Length: 171
Image 1 (tube, one colour):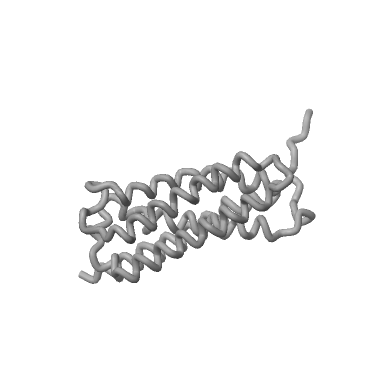
Image 2 (cartoon, rainbow, N blue to C red):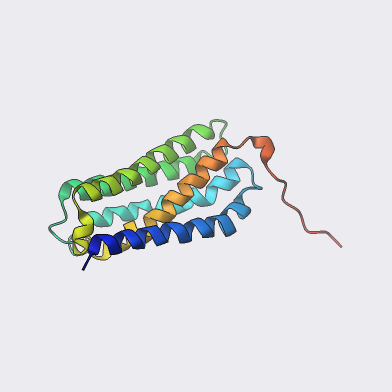
């Protein structure tokens, strides 16, 4: 069986579907919000990246998963989760943009590095080494990268471009 092809197709479809979800649902819900309100739900999502620590737990992943890969992925995700929580706590401060930029750059680099390191050690040729964590790179990471792209879009747009939300009419 061509495991790398199946792995790649799974990831590609996940990116397509999450991209469509973002275009249809996420972006319309976020684009009219102030910057802090727009990034808040994304920061909460990324605060759960401590789940990447599962790459360090034997039984969740195979014992022969290379430790160099597992530790980079696990601790990169944990660092990003901490940065997301810190950014959440600073959403009302004047220095709002800095922690969001740090979170988003570090988080994006972490995920791209995980894909790179995974391809470098040919993890797609032995999908069983990821065990239950197989769904992280095939389902969760595409969602996380799509939401990182949304944060870049939110942070790069001019504040004047915010579309006011319509309030329901009071009768």
